[in-house]
Structures are given as C-alpha cells and as structure tokens.
Image 1 (cartoon, rainbow, N blue to C red):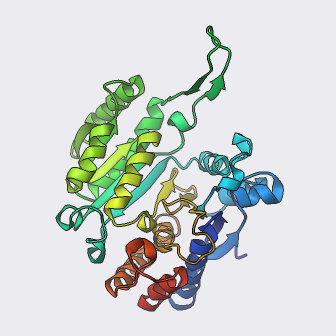
Image 2 (image 1 turned 90 degrees about the vertical axis):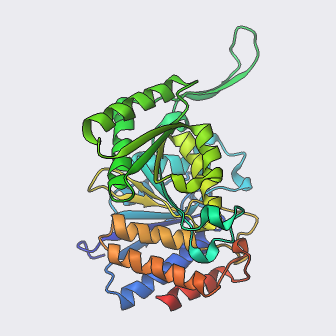
Image 3 (image 1 turned 180 degrees about the vertical axis):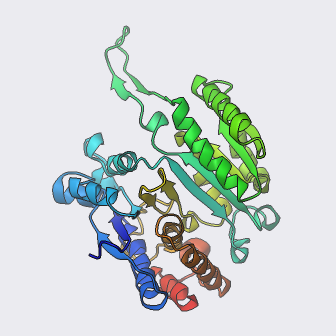
Length: 358
C-alpha cells in the first residue's frame, strides 16, 4: 500500500451487501483507470459473516483498519440465521460498535427524487418531483446506546423491558452544528424534530438546539417540530423541509420513511461523519434483504451513491461525486431499472449502465 494514497476500507457484510459492494468495486476500478482516482482499497468481513469466521461481528483487525483509513464503506448486516446469537455478538452489534469506535456521530441521509423516478414513488408526482431533503441523524448516542435490559427482579415479579434515552449537551450541539452548517449551503432552513411534549430528553434537545441557534446561527431559519408530526408532514408536504436534525431513534424512522418518497429505499445513500480529520463511515440505507440475496436482484445505486459521498466528504474528490451522481441520473433517464423500481435489470446490469454513463 502507498502510504500517501487515501485508503478505502470495504466491509461488504451480509445478504445483498457483497452484491452491491461488488458494483462499487467496479465503479472504483473504472474511476481509477479513467479519472485519475488514487485509492488503496482493502476489504474485510463484517457482521454475521465475520461472526461465522471469528466469533465477532467486528474483528479487532477490521476495527483498527477502519480507524486508520480515510473512509469506510459497508454494505448491510444481519439475517435470520443470526437471530439466536447473543445480542452483543449479533451483526447489528458490530455495526453499532463500529459507529461508536469511529465516533461517527453525524449521519447524513439525503432524500432526493430523480426526475425519471418521480412516478415510482407511492405518492403523487407533484408531491415528490424535485424533492431534496437532508436528514441529519445523531448516530452514536440516545436510546440505542443507553442502558437496556429485560428485568425480572421487580416488586411484582412481572418482567419488564427497558431502554434508556440519554443525551448530553455537547452531543446535541455537535450534531446540530452539522445541520446548521449544511443548511447554510442549501436553502438555509433547519427543522429540529423531537418529542418535547412528552419526553424530558426531547425537551432538553429543543432547549440546546434553540440556544445554539441564537448564539451561533441566527442567520439560519430554525423551526421545531414534534417527531410524529414530522412523520406526517413528510408524506403530506415533504418539500417544505430542507435539513431535518433529529436524534438516533427518530432519525432511523424518519429517514426510512423519506426513502420511499424517492421511489425505493435502494436509492438512498448515507454518510456518518466524525470530527474533521477522522474517517467517515458510508453505507446504503437499505438492509441486508436476505430474501433476495444471491439472486442478482438488489439495487446497487444506494451503495454507489454512498461511494460518491465518500469521494466528497473523506477522499478529497467532490468532482467525482458530482460525476458519479450525473452518471446514475443518466442511467435512470435511459430507463434502466432494477425490480424495486419496476424494471428488470439485474444488479450487474445496473452497474453496467452507470459505468456506461460515466
């Protein structure tokens, strides 16, 4: 490996992960050969695949390699064959541990509707055409990382399950700063979503975001919206939103909902960013889809666009991100579709179309 060349670590994962990451490797090879992309690529097992090989969904080697790379691109993890594995060894635990180790606290999930797919959404064309939303989800704290358990030692003897939602002021401030900075380069509006009416953690979230806005970002329009209302507004009038900032749980739910505005969850990329100088973690929003794994049916566009985000945010080539986005648009404009978009193209044929457009 050339130590002066940026390194990209690929973690294909489980299910359709290896298939969609396979198309990323083809695109990266084309860009290396034809667009002066200097990139060292490493690949390691991850998730359930890693557990089967070494008893851990995130091996110590993969973790250290991730921390020393410029960018990490993963496929997806999980599947029914690991449902009975201890919770701390399940594929999803490997993903949470990786996010925490990388301190990848700001999850950027764009929801853009390509013009060629405005009729692919379950909503009317006039509702989704021209859609361009950025959801900023806090990714390394909140209910997914709080104390949790199933407790049988209660006064009545009845079992109870619990998950604790906790946020510190600094955790909220740093993700809100990312949202405000992004908004300044977009349409200058941030919507902060929480449940301040029934949750003290939500009330605290609103207070911290309000104070940060007044102190550092008074030029950016800020609105507060209860998360359940935000879910409703996303399907009623999604184009009212520019940047949405929210916690880990609500961000998970709202971004999956937003994915269907674009026509398919197979189109949505994501970036999870840490502080400047630290590696970013990139992944398609979709899951491992074990029901179609190995059949060549998966849509690779979310993975390819996630690679584009890595080029922009971590690998110093925003020009290639723009070129890759244009190639995806061109492929869709020509009518190439995988099954989730109502077409018949295979995973590889969708990759072929993007490379041809490049």
